[in-house]
Length: 252
Image (cartoon, rainbow, N blue to C red; front, side, top):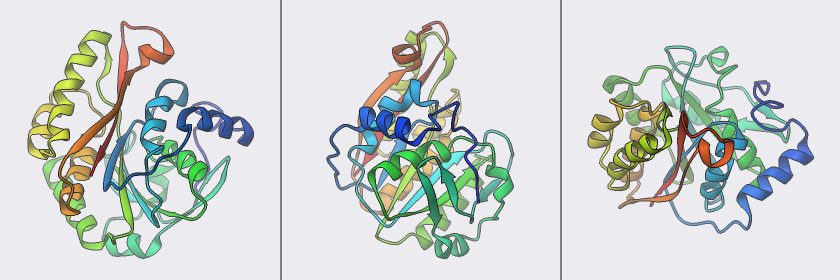
């Protein structure tokens, strides 16, 4: 069992308080047909509103493939054990995990936030679903191609890909907004090569998961991306001198 690492710090550990906070972020769900999304993974106080805007339109599917950067270990790995949050247990789709041919390493995900921060949103909205949790501590071209090929090979029709990433880190707010607008532009056009060319000169932490989300979306027939919400930590957590940017994007 993967125990919650960030409950009580990055988000509430009390189930009632957590549900109340999630309700304030999500409001009235209005699901839409889509293939991939990009959501932030910072503490809920800073990025929860932007994340909630995306989750409020996320459709109910059987499996959510969640890909995020691994902030601690330079490996690409998938977890095959259930994940626990204050709202209960989340099951892993072990059939897809086994078919991916990506190394299983449950220890590599023990402390990372990129997958965990997405799970309470899913639990708040849906009763019956599974996840495929992939973290990428390697984000070079070969790693991206490997994961893209694996997901295209094994993902079924009843799945949505969630790319977990924050955008520009620790620069003045006006710099973050300008840089992120420039980086987001090719995502909305589903141009993964141009996105990567731009993102690699920035501090976007999950550029590989985002590129994979773009390629998966095109594989599933998506035509364009849509920016649902953009914010910075200055909007919610104060200090405008060194902010983190958060984008909520869907591809359909």
